[in-house]
Amino acid sequence: MRKIACLFAICLLITGASFAQTTTPSQVKKVTLFSDQALVTRQADVKIAAGLNMILLESAASNIEADSLQASVFGEGEVYSVQMKDVYLKEQPQENIKILQDKIKDLQEARRALTDREGVFNKKSMFLDSVVNFSNTQVPQEIKTSFPKTEDLQKTLIFLDDGYSAISKDKQALDLKVSELDKEILALERELSGLTGSNKSKKIIEIMFNSAKEQEVAIEATYLVYNASWQPLYKADVPLDLKEVNLMMFAKIRQMTGEDWKGVKLSISNVIPLKGAGTPSLSSWVLDVQRYMPQAAAMMEDKAMAFGGMVNRRKQAVYEKSDNVMEDAKAPAAKFVTAERKELPLSFEYDLPQALDIESRDKETILPVLSKSLSGKFFDFAVPQVSQMTFLLCRTASDKELLSAPLNVYFGGRFIGKTFMNEKKPGEDFDLNLGADRGVKVKREKLKDKVTETAFFGKIERLTLIREIAFKITVENLKEKAVSIKILDNIPVSRTDKIEVKDVKIDPEPSNRDYQDQKGVALWELALKPKEKKEINIEFTVTYPKDVAIEGLQF
Image (cartoon, rainbow, N blue to C red):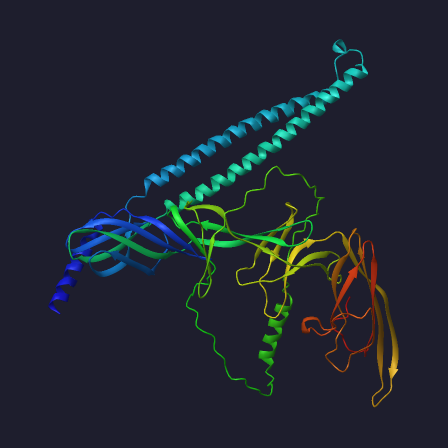
């Protein structure tokens, strides 16, 4: 106990004087990047004396999870403590500030030069305007001349047209450059503001090590930092023969931790970090008679109305597919270097093969992670009640590596548009959306919507409305080759005995009347020959009381 107390007292004395000690030079050697944070490994080599030593490593990261800190000392002795401390700075890191200030100054000077050129363009434009306006002024009698010849007028018009066109073109290019410079200046000013803010501090990793002898030891410290993240980005390249899909996943990295990563070994992980979430629990399933409470009912009605007013819309940018031209290649294109894949108990991790430099700046770094060829079945898909566009899909095998992310689609090496790739849902097929297919057209039109009244005789006499409705869906293959297409449409389903849906006639019969267990949602799977056209006809009758408001028939 006495030995422990002495050591503890020595620790307090050393800790009190530690801020005056110099830090040991260290470097970030490895980084494992998660979706919203990064695990940083910092290494150092230091000579120490026998006995108790205080080893200090400095980190420039601004937001470190102190509880995540771990450190190992590779040498003979014992580690007494490892902790993270904040040392507040009286002076700011002038070197980094000056670098940013110089960059901002250079960009602002470049912007002023562009603004001066814009003034020249304005003067040229004013000169041309004066030439045009001169023809509208009253010319004194003594300087009047004969009317210019046709050739002279034509040359003047060409001069004015060329002059205005050149000024307009140059001014547009100039405005674009000024806009790009403004973005760069704004990003650097945000970065500078982060360095010059008040109460800036630096992080010190404090390791207390009792060395068995005088020796050189290696230090390795790991800790979690925030303001670092990655998101997947996919590129799907579909060959013209539609035999497979070449899929690449890129990591879109943002790094604003406050410390640069130079020559680091980078790993990308798709693990979901645990953030204090417990395992789910289940309560008893209790059945009871509903008790009406006026005030509570009013509150529930208000919430229901508010919820009913919210509409989620998915936006999808679709670009027109251009004609592909096959060209003879002199040599095969070089492939992207991808990461080495490791499967862990909870996730996948990808080790990038090359050492990387990633600065702590407000910019994105995009790196290739994986590449795979997906074989599958290609088909068109349409929901004409929602959209008259058809979409080319590839039904393929999915795995847990593929995450939800934006997808850039290429056909034969040509970019045609953007879409979004969703993760595979349990029990559903994985369909890769490759964008709109303009070679297959689909149209849905209403043929009949007739309402008649009739008296319903039974125990109670009342008026009943009978509504006869008919639709026609036309699908046409404009291509020179056969296609297969899947079409979704629905027939109304009644949830009350006051409404009857009857006399349903569908031609041709759908492949599945309740697609994915959705009652009334029908799926047709059609094969179309080149230039072939097919029709789907849907008829039904809806019967309901005249004095009852019906939800779902407003189309």
